[in-house]
Length: 114
View 1 (cartoon, rainbow, N blue to C red):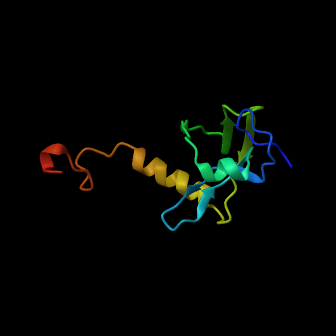
View 2: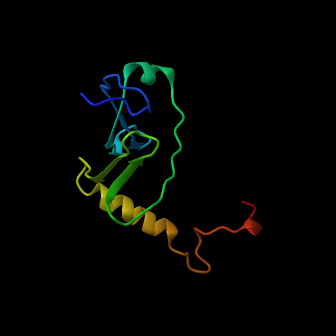
C-alpha cells in the first residue's frame, strides 16, 4: 500500500485522491484517479485544494498533484459510456461559441433589455 502524500506522514494510505467532472444528472464526463494517496487520518481531517482548470484539445485529462511527496501525475484519456457523447458535447460548444448572424431572431443584445 502506498504512503500518504502528506509530507512527513508514513502511514498507509488506502484513499486515492480523484477528481470528477459531472453533469447535472450527476453522471460523469470523466473521473480519473490522481495516483496520489491519503491516509485515513488525513482524509478525515480535511484538506485545502487549489484547482487550476486549463482547457485543451487533447481529449484527455492531465492531473498533477503538487505538494505531494513524491509528486503524482497522471494522464487519462476521456472515455464516455454514452456513445458519441464527447462529439455531441463538442458540437454543442461549437454552436454556442459561434457568432450569430446580424438580425438572428435568437440573438439579444443589452439594448433588448437582457
